[in-house]
Length: 417
Image (cartoon, rainbow, N blue to C red; front, top):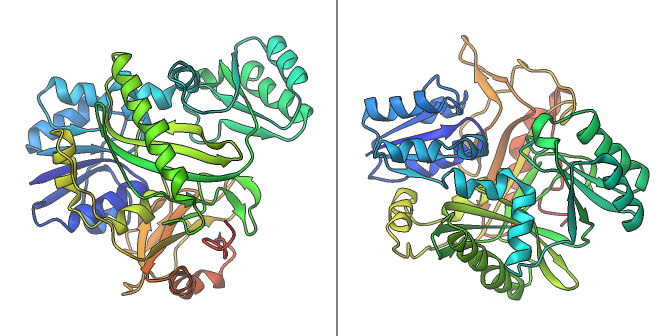
């Protein structure tokens, strides 16, 4: 079987590594991929939003299955384009991917189908937005309605911060069209967790929950990032909350999308929070999350391509999970998530029996060494029988980054939450 993965980050590298375990998969292509992915698959120089070129490559290469990693091609309709040519592709179509592409759509859907989430209102007028903020008070959450590369959410602890956030989106046009409409939400307090599910129409097959660490620095300090590490399963997560999330959130969303004429196929990501009133939805993503994918897929015993075929055919994939714990710690470029340098040489990344290395923002140099090419550079993960063992192995491996100030990583992934 020939499989084509669209994307270039850590999530896509993890998908590739999982596909490599299958004795049914003979050839893996990735567009555009990255330096580390090139070790495990054939990288193709096509951008992930160049939909016509992606379709043409899949046809010419006689690809059996295409898996779409990132949100932008999904919201642009890459799945629709593949299906129009009779190609097998795994992911939601454009009409269904709007659950991530528009936060206002997602909130309206949740309200309509009684899915627990924060109180909200949507605004395009700056004065109306400020009036609402003054009436509600702080803390309060400001979100750009569209896709903003994970940077369109501000948790404002004061009214002044909230005013600045809506000014930057509605007046200063910080996120372009993505911020021309803002969703203002009630602040929810509690522990967050991520729940992925394979979905086909109304059929839902949940994966094990994971938790990521969003803040840049130890002790959950510093600015929000795309995620500095993750772990699964979650030792302190109430299993009743997981059952509630599946029955009262994931399944109703799948049914709701079906009723709205937007049937969902692919991986649905629910970003959830445990409140005193039970789990509530923070956001939905229309694909595997990053970096949680890098700790969920290593625990999956099934053949991933078989799961995709089963789910797409409406067959229960009978998901099976390894015992033990997976933890992954991200190595980031100094300065991330703000300004950072690219093209910095990485230390030698030897193979290691106890750890796996997932590349996100890397490129290969002519000298065959790896260089940084993004803010989140790579993730080092380990699957062990206890969290402490996984942490020990990861931090043993990461000491190679301690000789330079060009990179940083948190030393408490899996400890603080």
